[in-house]
Length: 353
Image 1 (cartoon, rainbow, N blue to C red):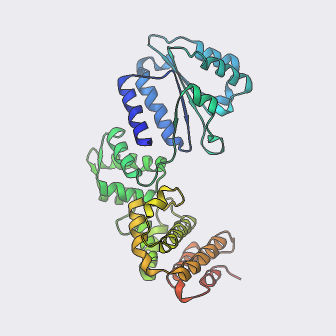
Image 2: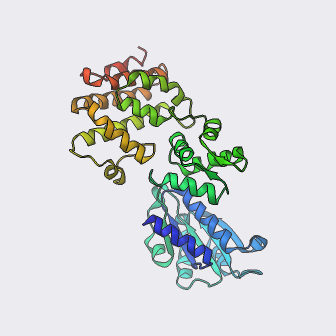
Image 3: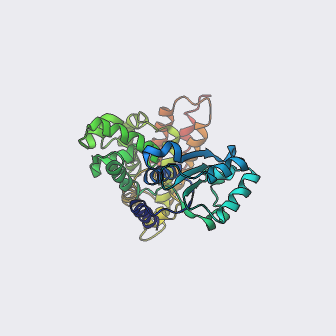
């Protein structure tokens, strides 16, 4: 459904078929802001934008100011665009004025109401009923590669290989703002050429075989030596920390534990449920977890989870020696978990007495 809604939205922009009022909400602010920018670009000519575009924060608007913004006619253009960010922060009098306006919105004004993410992201039913409403949820891991390809082609006017897109996602994760920043650098680096794996390696500093996913695969296979060899490379990568590594390992162990309790585990079912965030592409995670099942049993999963809990506690301890030492001990504990009923004990040595 989200893909169909997105396509319909894009087609309406191409046709110039605009609504009088839009209401954008949801947890992905990057996608919301991108949609706002696209609407502005399609609806307001750049030559008259200074006269026909107003972008305001909800908290700064009173009844008089809001009325002036919505009542001013367009100048030398078909329409004006008014964007109100953080619409939930409107004062009571301004919100009442907005509700009155929405009963009969002006035909030559496009009003874009943007709700913030986080605790205030709950949909406003009154606005939803009177506006063209879209929810912007974070993209699931399987949709991120397609977003990368689309962003490079349509926003940056460049090209990227599927292998480079996959490697970038492995290195950067699923946060679209971070991916967009890296893609800007990659497009500049490629200088009009195609962004390939070599460009990702040079700009982002990660190579095939040295990603967080590769590290997770080694741990899943109980390959301590292979995982430890990758650890320095993983810790040196941007936006990767001991905390994020422990989170990824915990997700992996819980997923494998879920899988070994089923005769034919469908890991995509688990991922689609929103209960697992693998911090890498879905297909890659599903393949790795399925292949790892033969290396684990219930006792080993329990011991591994004890070790991960101990690692989480140790990371909050100010006396910890170093992230490298803690993660080294954690890898050894996980890969040897079935041979020890107290795999967590090894983690305690990371905290000096």
